[in-house]
Image (cartoon, rainbow, N blue to C red; front, side):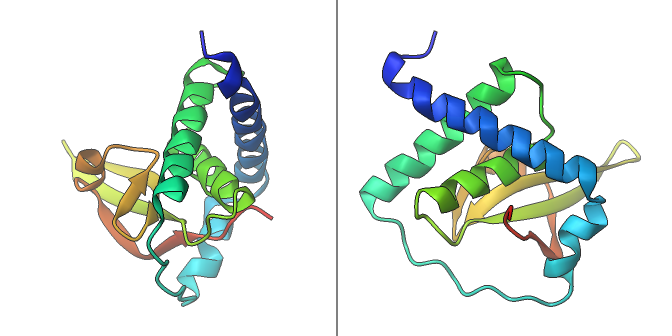
Length: 143
């Protein structure tokens, strides 16, 4: 059971997941990726101060927990979009949804996570290194 003080963040995380799920269902994945694939380049994000890092990690935990125990079990792209959206809502810009691919046992696999500089959110950094990020494989934030 989550602590009472984390409940508002969990509720916002569930809402962000619902918004992200709606976007993924309404837009084709290629449409979500199109702005990044068109050559858009974002400037590097400045380093996070300790308070921003704590907030970013709290958002990550809330979204992952809401994804495990909430209304539905979102895919990685939905989780990443929700984390990115919540970071922006908390004034922490520069987080980018990255998409990577790999071939395992003859199966093509894709995965999405949030990256801000060297900081990986929404997944374990060790797992992310098993994927080759798509060039321009970034997704624009939720509107």
